[in-house]
Every structure is written in C-alpha cells, then in structure tokens.
Image (cartoon, rainbow, N blue to C red; front, side, top):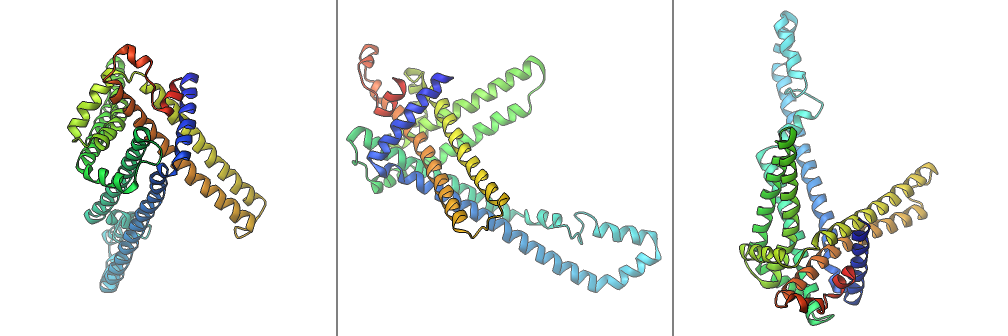
Length: 342
C-alpha cells in the first residue's frame, strides 16, 4: 500500500511539473470544474422551476375545487361519516389538497421533467468526456512532440471527430456498471453470494480501468469504439501489469487532498460562525474566496492528473509494443510515468 502511495505521489508531482511547463494542459481541467458548476446549477434551477410550477397549478386547482364544491363537501361532511372520511382522504398526505409539498413533488416527476434531467445529465457527461479527451490530446502532443506543441483548437477538432465513439463508450460503460450493480444487489448468501459479489467488483473495476484506456485509444488513434476496445485489450494483456498500483495511489491521494481542503473550509466557516463574525466582513469574504479558489485548483489538478496518467500509460504501451522484453528495460518511459515507476 505504501509503495502505491509513493508511486502515486511521484506521478502527481511529475504531472504537475509537466503542467507547469505547458500550462495549456491544465486549461481543459479548469473548464471541467466550471462546467460542473454550470450543469449543477442547471439541475437545481430545473428542479426548482418544476416544483414551483407544479405547486402553483396544484394550489390553483385546489382553490377552484374548494370554490365549486366547498358548500357541497361541507354539507356531506356534516351529514355522514362517509363524508368525513372522504374529506380526510382529500387532505391526507399525497392527496389532491395536500399542503405538505410531497404531492407536488410526485407531480413534478413528469415525463417532461425526467427527459429534461436526463438531457442535462447527458450533456454534463459528454462535456466532461470531451474536455478529458482534449487533455489527452494535449498531453500526447507534449509527450511525443515536445512542450508547447499541442494546440487547443486541433485537440478539440480531433475529439469532436471522435464523438460517436466516445458516446458509445459512455453507453457501454453505463450498461457494464449497471450489470455489476445488479449482480451485487441480487447476490445470494453463502459462498455463491461471495462469488457473485467478487465477480461484480471485478467487472466494475476492470471496466473503469478499461474505459480510461479506451478513451486515449479513441482520441490518439482516431479509431472506433470497438477498435479501441480491442486495442486496450491487447495493451492490457501485454505490458500494463502495474496499472493497478498507479491507479490506486493517485486516486487515494487525490481524495485525501480534496477531503483536507473541504475540511479546511468547514473549519474556517465554523470558526467564523462561533466567533459571530459577519458574513460580509473582509476577513470572511477573503477567506471564502481563497477557499473557493483552492477547491477549483485542487479539483482541476485531480482531473488533469488522472487524464495525464492514463495518457502516459497509453503512450508507453504503444511504444513498448514494438520492443522486445530486453529492449524495454533500457527504453525510457514518459517522464511522469518514469518518475512513478522508478
């Protein structure tokens, strides 16, 4: 475990150094952070508008119903026990006259609302994969042609031409993860249940790893999804035995750093609250701005580092395919990967 952390830390530092040499490599990751904010706000506004519209229409309908039938309902309520029971049913939880908002929430989940949410989530995912592909193309140019060789417009054009394959990758990834989750949820007890759980974990982990290798194959070589899948399979069977070590170390370090940054923000705002500091005070505003900037930078760096790692891994794999086992020992890996595996 400590060895994987050490390798992951070396990889992170080397990737940061590479990004410092060519700051354009970091630009797509920064855009990814802001796109996440944008789509999250869109989801919030979509949900808020649906609930507001549904609540208004429900209130209007209830008012009309009360106006038209109030006297009749009151008469029956006073006259019979059945009328009382009917009135209570109308005002109960999720009933037509329910004022708790739960009924409005159910009505808001209309087919149009579901379609809108799916559309936003799909655009969100596609935007993130597009920017990840741009990072992959820029890092590939940096590694193979030198610092500053990659152009943002050229990388965007290359990724845009590969969108059909990237969309197919997303659909297959979603299906694979759903199957793995279904297997985990439906597992039995005993040895059979443990075996199914283990198999579902293998499927999920393998496809997560394969997906990050398939994307560089699609972007770098301009191949179809199925061509990239076969390419990644050959790479996985050939010389990428250390992929798990690097992956675990990088992900764990990124999560720890993000957790520390989040904890620092919570601690700072908690101190301001306990000290009865005004939210409009210069110290709180300055601290909040610094914390928000730190969150953006750290998140962008974690996105960039993952993309850089898998790109380095793919570059090393395609170069090593043409070498014998003896030649690979003396052949230098891409600088960040070489630092991690040293």
